[in-house]
Length: 181
Length: 283
Image 1: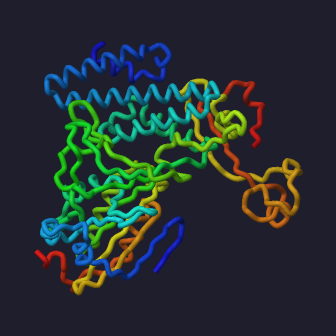
Image 2: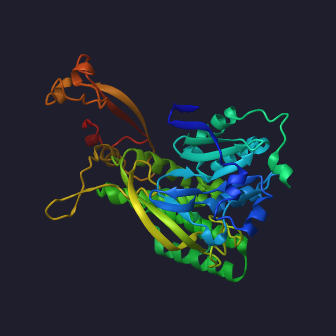
Image 3: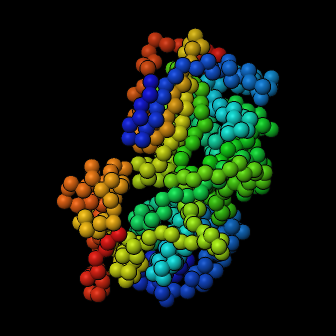
């Protein structure tokens, strides 16, 4: 699915990159994997940028993780898919708010969208919402491990409405992330 | 100078901006803040930091206004950006006091002035940052074990930021929405290699020459108006339409009563000097 109206680029695609995929990446050590096993919201890296091999995170990821941890809702366990020694950041100096891609269990996706929307509001001036663009991706993992990636790039003002309207109703689903604990 | 006296000076910026002694205010604020920090009075130190930034915003706006009056437009643009950035740092801490120190006026004026500049393309560098340190504690930033100091928060009278210690420039891009507005694209003289300012400052000049004081009120509305074809007589029927639609002139505005071009209408709170009323803007 793809939309391109009023400067909004919004895509939804199936992806094999669920929790298991990210936990098996070469930059995830055995010790780190034990910590990440407890998480149901993972900030994940981009694995290459131009000709360079990563992993890379967008500038401001420390701030984003700190926000998620400080404002975490009940049952939400955020973490980041990297060791300290390998954490590096790509800073693109245009006025686009780039938020790290996240992987989240399906039941928690609406809560995460609300949290990210709140984070965006804190990042930008209220009266600049219309002119500030946001780039964000969220992989939603179902109970059986199937995953769907939503990517949004467009005005901050329409972020929550665009992604929120695409989320499936969570009723009748178990949360694989919470089950893991 | 006492704190009350400083606050009074900052509140009266509309009338005292020419006569107030900026160095004295700056020195007095620094001394008061040092005393508060040394005594461990965090709340007071934070308030004084905010007053320092308030003063810096006022000074930046006044300087930008003066630079634009002197037709140093790029310098004025850069100083407006300093005011904009400083407001964004102050905003999370000091919003309720904005009106009494004219910060709300300045914030609005800066945003509107920026839209009147002709700069549309900017150079944007791309960096790979491998390590950075906290400006408050000096510790290396750890993503898994943070030092606890938050970027933008005020500690001991200073704002926390990150100091990059290992960085690689990956490239540059040309963007339309830069985070650093000062990186305007200029041409250079092919022979001397010196910077050549190719921009048309008609709109910003029109406004600034009609404002007597930096805090005189103004507003503007951007619309479109059809301009007579006689102004575009040098453009052929098969060339691109001067309205910038991308279509041929003959298939766009030529069959109409004029070329549809942006039109800016200004409203001034105080009447501009009489000699300025006769001049009509045309781009």
